[in-house]
Length: 82
Image (tube, rainbow, N blue to C red; front, top):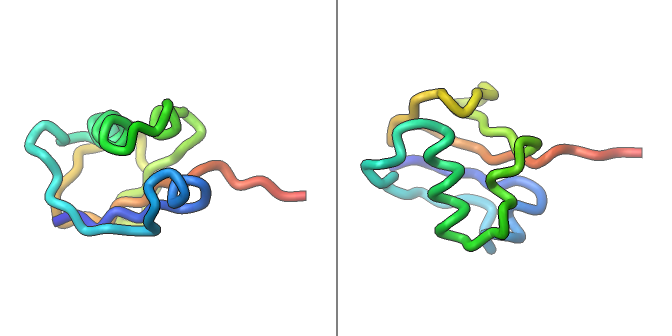
């Protein structure tokens, strides 16, 4: 199982701040996770935005990073301030 965290507006899109899920066998890299989440939540491109970062076990990774079900994975939108 993977613990997936959704921060900021992504929790609004998913309707939850986190969940534990078994990743499908075709989700082996961060880029696959983006596509899977996008289709699963019908998110109108939100998960595919390059400004949405993915962290695995607390480390920000690129889309080529491999995933394993034992990981904690976080989707993080850009942070604004003022």
